[in-house]
Length: 536
Image: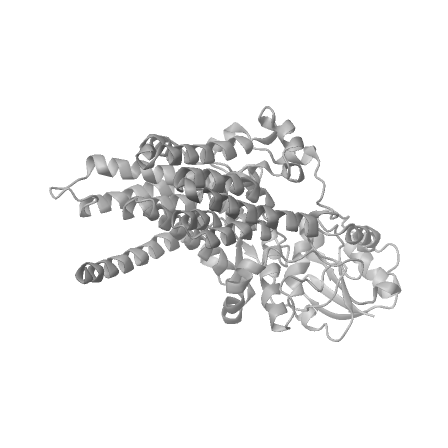
């Protein structure tokens, strides 16, 4: 017994090392060629910076990650944002930051804001692939098939596309972690993994993860433990209700129009189109060969139990159908009647569940093929020759799933203009955007260089008071109106590059805004590239 354990430990260590190499390679493959500039550019959706940081949701995520360590260092709550949307309103709780902000904290201390963010993105590939592989091993699949299943999940185009700036792609590893915990009867860990989904602000994904847990518990747990699966799901329901009542209710994102759903709905052609098209939300491409392999795995999965085959089949099919949104007959009725669904606007947000199910079914198909075709004279599954074959299959799958979505995006490099801002006082940045307009993310990037209260911010869950404040100040972007003394603004930063990025203002607006400031007695404090800072 001791000899067998001693032999298995090195094999296990080699397998873990191989998995790390495989999934790190997935991260490099998915982000190539942007990865060549990882030291000073963000790995994100391509965008032009016009001489300063390029706007994008990656800046919102980076700020959320940074805020965790910043607040903990001040002995304050990592869920609080003490700077955005002041003085009209408090910012919504920092739900996006707490989970990945913890590993980001030491990475930032060692490598700086930009590289730390990029490392979190790259490590999310390792986490997604590794946990999917671990879960498949717990189902009894052999190492090569499990490795390939993890590879598929790591490289699934929707998960990759959502990793270019949305937290959804980065935390998709919670799904295999959840199923792994259920499979190993670690119900407390399962409840924590499932509750982390809504507590990270991913309420739409939670709407699908809860029935996933119930279906998986029915398929894999003894009947005596079904109630424990229900308790795990109940924990997520409670977390979701807490977030909905405390964060979403009363915010500008509390109500969604069905016109927004129509805008983001996928089409059938998107499932077989190898390009980004109208955006990463509609990137539901599944590969061309991968779905065929997964379909074969649906029959092979019956070896592991009819319940598991049904659960994986439904988990692959239903999110894919719902991703069609308004292009699916009856979706409007579901959107208006199912609790929680009516507050969503992107039907594809359930797709990580389908990605994981398809990866599992494909791995099961490959396992079944190995059992049928590559037994050696000792009847040992996966002899060395077949391991090489698994490597070839892995390369073919990586090619099948490849969709280049990452770019090397201009970062918020240290700015002499922001470094000149010292002392107390709020900061106003021009141009002014409504809270839910993503160009405001640029201000979050630079906020880390001068943390202070500002009327600006970027959040789809901002309070209505913050929205009214932005609309009141918007005229200042073109030099019209006056800055109310009651706001306590001491510094104004004019981002000329952001005028060019957004194209929401006339070409004369940057000059007019600066002339108005000088006329009102503001003095130029510092300039650096496209950024100019004025002081009262």
